[in-house]
Image (cartoon, rainbow, N blue to C red; front, side):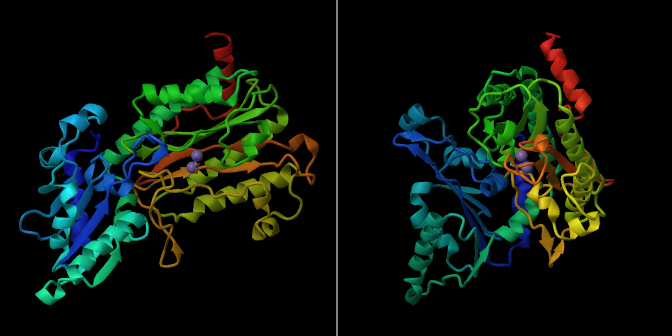
Length: 443
Ligand code: GLY
Ligand code: MN
Ligand code: MN
């Protein structure tokens, strides 16, 4: 069961229904089971919208929200209990469980959906669904609509309006409740322990996957079912590949290793990056780049708060990084002119962050009415500047080539500014070197 209270799921459904037009219905499918190969399935992960509204973790389920329906507004279609299947695959809530444990007003077997759902849609003016996100479900939905249309001569009234659910639901998901922040804090704490463990275990001669194993150990030990995304463990020049996932190279003295990894708890993601030296000691060039990225991140934190817009943190990182690259001789020219022509993009080619929540790159608009969104308390985001100096960048001195650094933390916007959820992982050069030295000394 989710750590989010049952009452909160009910509150979310009510809040969504309050925004729907009168005489409408919202329909959402659970995530399908994904086949990995032949008889092997991927670990099941519920669809984030479905999870948000129900906390119901099973596949083969459909939510129908029908404001004003006399026999109950929240209808859940789900698998029937089946002792034989449950013996093989695990317990199912069944219709009784859907009502008792998940707050459904009414529950039906998923196998009866073709007979029942058209009757629930019939007579409603508007259907809300996540059009385009689940093509197979979209086809089913059209079949149900067509079955109503085919009975129009008998007086059936098919809906005439179809609206994407996303902009209502995704705006709600952007504002995290106290319970959600608590779960995200938990995911952040476990991920922080995982990063510390990887730093402590790091030795030349091990492989990138050796450190990935340390991460996975802490994730599972902390109760996380899986990482929130494929862990990136990138040593040396691999750190310049932004979504590196091979994780199979040897760790060499003199190189940095960049780890971008976070677990998920109750489907809520954490997303942390740390970069540290394999040897436990930064070289002067590594330290210079590292401290510049750290300075950019500090500037970004200062640019996050309720009176600030989404892009201010990014702009702050671009300022600091461009100025610093000029100071170090990696960029040449006037800082303002370099900023005006986005010169930093040769070294810093991504943005300073993204929304974080049930999806690691969470839902929610970044612009409203064409303007950058103003931040509000309860919004959660990452702050992750980086500098990546390509190994084949011949326009910079050789000593800089192949250095890749990213530092990433998760924050929640507060009334006064922001709170960092992932502060438990050491970040200054001195702290990292001290932690790694202590681990080597067997302390
Ligand atoms: N790990 C994906 C990201 O940092 O956006
Ligand atoms: Mn991120
Ligand atoms: Mn990341």
